[in-house]
Length: 273
Image (cartoon, rainbow, N blue to C red; front, side):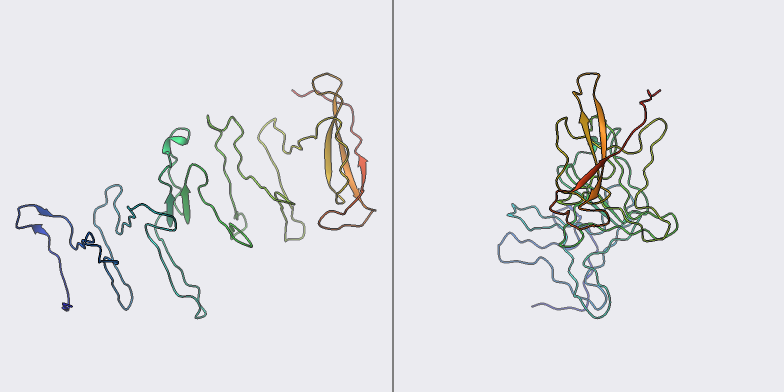
């Protein structure tokens, strides 16, 4: 194995008259090279820089061009764990720390074109299905905001031609609870809902007419059901409050039932506008 103290590629013109555009090249077509470059250093294995400030320039670019059966990546970062400190497999530092985009992402999906990233974003993901997908046995995605008006998780839904006017900022789905809001401060609120102008702040989707009251429930549950036929004028929506198995008894998951429901008496209807 050849060895030297340092290697410097100066570029220029090759003997065949072509310009040298790659400083170091490993040709793996022979089939005997598994790793193109094995580099080690005391403080860093590879340091890459570029002075080209044009668009789509990279200090380090990783490509996986072969047919894959899964589990492959363009860039993979691995770091040892332990030692009393938090270590990181991959760290990105810039206006946006890490930007992930799928190959089948179409920037024209967004109304008016792909919106520009927000400076100071830690992670930005673009994809036709999920921008960011987190999976865990505990918490898939966790957001933390520090400060008096900070937000842990902020979801924005764009009402464009593909949404049918039903864009959703935050969608929660769960086997037992779709969205759970909880305040940890005395005098706080578990949830706050607001809408601009003459718009409803909260909506309960009523069950179809003829639906029986739920057998299971917890004290404080609300249940809305349509009474009468919605296609006629003589229909209304009745709202019920769950009293539980007996007043003051609360279990989770919901009790096996049957539980008691009390109808909430409403005043005379008032036409909007």
